[in-house]
Image (cartoon, rainbow, N blue to C red; front, top):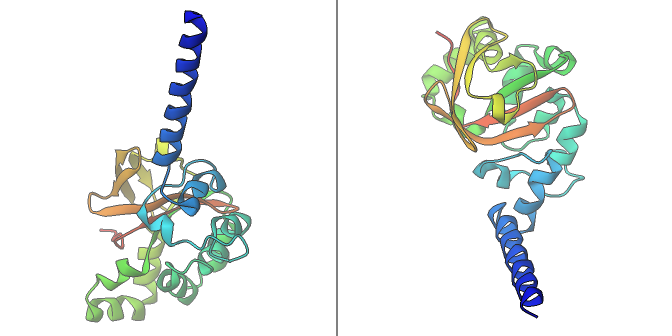
Length: 197
């Protein structure tokens, strides 16, 4: 009798712990479903801004089927980045890359740059291309391998610090939605534009 009561208590505790773990994964149906849709590892507050409808081109499911530049074009948080990539002719370069990691500045990241400075960068094709390729690293980097120094397509290194779901790039730019899969890349949305030296 005591053994049966003990087993029932253990089962109840396990059920409670499991429900707590599910709650910790996110509040609301969309947030709970996102990690599974993104390969069990998408994280960050900006992930809530991704469309939940799988048919929407900016959803995790749709982005996962597309090469990275095409996938980014459907993401409502990356319209400024997409326009810049198109302006310097990097769409094919990114879409045809075998496996890359892209630290993609969200629209608000560009808004942090004073307008005069941003206009100057957008008018200088070489400078813009240098800045954009500084956001791309060879290989698909999983969250567990993020911390450290990585060589960019531009040629210089960038450094990622942090762990779990709390990362900063070059000490200042926070990853606000991480580990988004596309057909040929892993994407990390960042809240500041990364500037090569």
